[in-house]
View 1 (tube, helix red, strand yellow):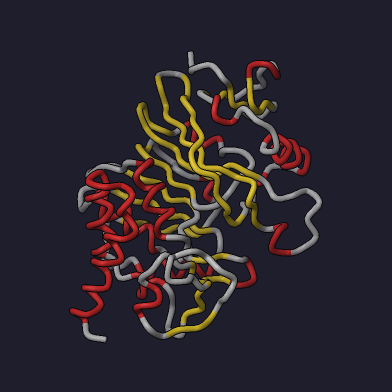
View 2: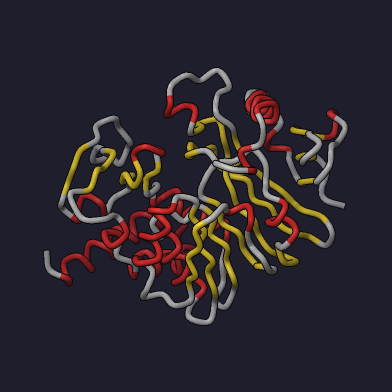
Length: 297
């Protein structure tokens, strides 16, 4: 396929992935159109989790070398042993809209994978912004470092996303499900800044390897720093690969969170607290963090 043909594919793909956002998605649409997705997937053939023509995910994986097949709302395998894929572009468009990264801002991207969405974020913050892209898997981090060379505002780090940032940032974008937010994220989120992550936990009774390393009992949580407190609100339910390291929590925390997702009240959450709350004041409460029903004080 010619370069002009691929560019045309990207423009159509960008329009489709951001269509639900309407005019509010113009900047994300332009960023998607600017970043060649195929450059972040390794050499073809690519292993795609199939979609039917109506863009509904179906269990029909397959290999393809046709760029047209990856310029759709498809998941593309990156690391099979860890169940890591390139993510749903429509979901990320929605999440990036919630993140609302602006030109000139510093964004921490935890769980950067091979760097595709780090590049999209780099387009959003522009040449005067900064992106710190952290990836736990060494091979993926090395790939991201190579893939992101044309975006000098991006620094790729191999390590645990919970250890970053090391200075205040305006936005934190986390691309794995977790049972607890990292202390550094809350400590170094700038006033008015946004932390966005999937909160959830795997089924404690799961025996299947995929079920133990991912969760479909999770939802996007948006946390905004307001003065000395944190506003919090849930958004869409999601399925994500689950955390490694400190943000995975311990077995007791994961089990309690799993149970919380099985009951009502999530829509009433308005605040995040770094301490336990009385059970009648919170949807979820623990010694590490709580999600309260009242606005932040």
